[in-house]
Image (cartoon, rainbow, N blue to C red):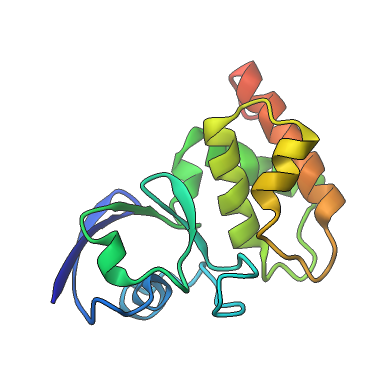
Length: 158
């Protein structure tokens, strides 16, 4: 079956099993390896991408569910205002430790800020609750989201 997607702003056609997880199509067929495999059960958030602007776990999203839709991965999120602000804040606050979960964390944070430019700590906790960081960088993640929010609300990045 041919699946048509727009990935990071570029139209893509894939001949693939419609039940293949989106994660494997991105990583194996499109060579976009920034999206990580974590648990394979949509519990850790490492595989988070945006599907028509909403964060989804790509390890459990069948390719056919993405047919005709827009996908944004960690490789493309920096082209959005929220993604750019989050990536900048992540570096400024020095969030990553091992870094494995960070692409999923950034994708969830970017989706939050795209829809809510002034999130409370509760909003952040709710939006980020499906993302696990084994290194425990949660305080830095929250600080980076607040920093990105401040930058977005100023209309700038730095």
